[in-house]
Structure formats: C-alpha cells, structure tokens
Length: 113
Image (cartoon, rainbow, N blue to C red):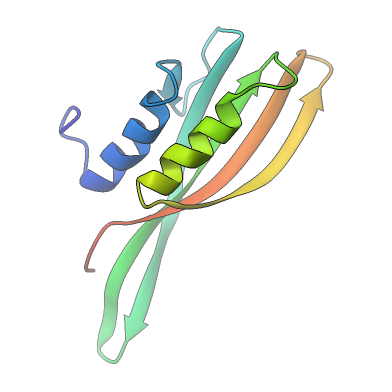
C-alpha cells in the first residue's frame, strides 16, 4: 500500500498517478498542470439493522493552462477502470490565474460498514 493508505485511497491515488505524477492530496502545486484531490465524507447504504456498506466521497480538481488538455479524458478512463463512480461537475476558465479548472465528484466503495 502507498504509505499505509486505506484501500479506497490507494485506488484514487493510483488513478491519478496513471495520468501523471503532478498530484497532491488537498494542497495546490506550483505547476502549469496538476491534480488536487480531497475526500469530502462518506455515504452509507442502510438496511434493516443499520449500515451495510460505506463509500467515501470526494472531489478531484485539475488546473491546467492547456485549453484542450488530454488529462481530463485520461483521468475519467482511469477512474472508471479503478471502479470509481464519478461525474464531471464543472469546467471553467479562471482569467485571474490563466488556468482552466475541471472538477470531478467521485465516490469509491470502501467495504462493509
């Protein structure tokens, strides 16, 4: 495992690293293109006596100066291949920084509750 990361985090980290090595957990990098990811919480499937399965929710942000960057499609392929549920939440150009900002929301199952 990566630095004793839980299995769900390893899936998220590996999906990002398959695209590039410019990735950070919650901290901005000083680069012309990079990913930042953060877990936001969890969802639990409730049945009968209580929670039976839990998933971690989070977001990934790509900051890039390339208008037609290939990384978004590559990340989407890797998240899908890793069994991570995701959707593209927004894409915006930030004129004050010169970055295109893509944001994905994702959810990854982490097993029984």
